[in-house]
Length: 230
Ligand code: HEM
Image (cartoon, rainbow, N blue to C red; front, side, top):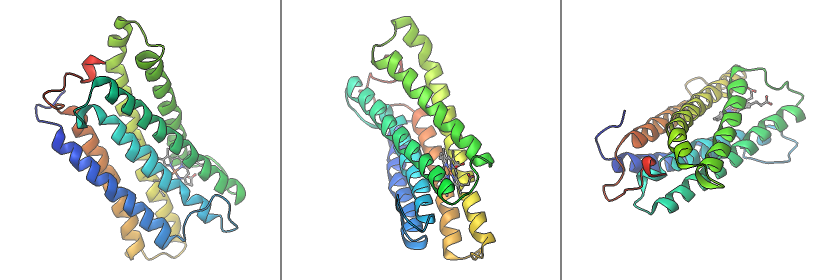
């Protein structure tokens, strides 16, 4: 399934879209939604942490973790360390982001886990955690036997990409859900904020597409450190 084109141009697009996506979600919550807070009497500010941490943490930093083998001309061990540390950061920020959504619900007496978004969201976090722990144990410490590593690698790649695509889809549904709530409470359907939220969601999907294009393409030529060398 590998494309025969170099990955590097795709990885530059990933970095650029990462910055753009982070800016858009921050403009949304800070400029249009009143900011973010961990403790506040205005509980919406607690919710606002959720899209910020899910996009910048799980999706953007997670995407950068996925492409680390294709985006840099570094030693295999360095790339492996980048891959696992960036994924750990993505997972931790994702867990805090989901916790913020529960905290907002609990402090506002809103039910938990009633929506498709929340069901898929919990699934994503659990699978992401399992994937990280399995990868750590088999490929890093204590490390599996050579046959187990090579047997596990294609599964690690396939399962990891599945979880990542599910995360991008879940985030897209999250924007839709929040925007629908806001529009039902009177937000203008073609107003600046509605366009910004939809545009952030579109950018999130395009970001995911470029992460997939990057991993399906060829790493730097001098790099003998692709997946097969893990
Ligand atoms: C992959 C990224 C994401 C994951 C894993 C995720 C996960 C979750 C989970 C597990 C909940 C349930 C909280 C509860 O029941 O108390 C939730 C709630 C919510 N999320 Fe996300 N989320 C993600 C991204 C987003 C984004 C980008 C938005 C955009 C605003 C969003 C909007 C919402 C909304 C409105 C709720 C409250 C309503 C509901 O429970 O469905 N989510 N999310």
